[in-house]
Image 1 (cartoon, one colour):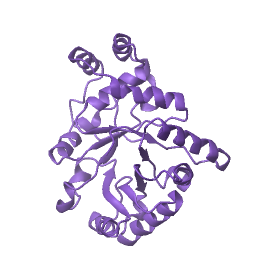
Image 2: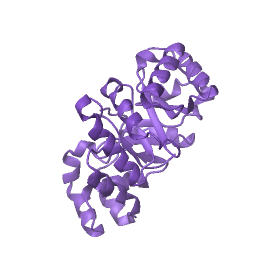
Image 3: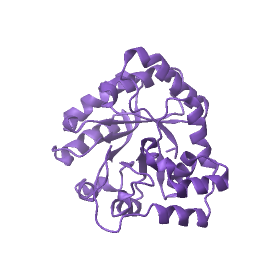
Length: 266
């Protein structure tokens, strides 16, 4: 799985913007991004339709991630939801298919459907999103180490995952996929510590925030941007090597939690 991808939240919400959104995705592909993250929730399928337009003739070599609603998490529901997503994206399979957040359906039923999809070649792998430690432990034991990822809200300002979830995932070699890695361009990018580190590297604050996440073990980032120039800037974070001094400053300014805390969610 690539360590850097493009999120598509808020894409496909307005049909008149479909062509523009598809062009943004094509620009990202031209820049070398191969991982695209979406969900049936995004634009109620609109983002997946945009992806379908953008990747025509370019499916090979891409790593497509999508997510299904908890209310579609029954054995038959997940199969039907996946088939709808495949039609919208106009492709034969999804590389990684995730339960968007925990719901009320017994996970045994959900994973029965996911296994059927994988056995039938409609998905390559499955995983979860927004799962706290208790949710992860409720995953059928045989499937815990098979999870393709736990996609979570994770950035320097929100390190809740590091209390328990990160260690659980690392022990089982389950990647973390960080959404909103820039905290939706909030106060995080005005952090004094981040900007001091950025000045040393002649980089932007966003690049440092992404580089910090990429430094974390087994972590993938999926920043969303509607501007090709910003996507290019974000990608340059892959070239930044943070020093121990950099990491210490960032950790001191934006510490991990010191007590039990649930994951954030956006």
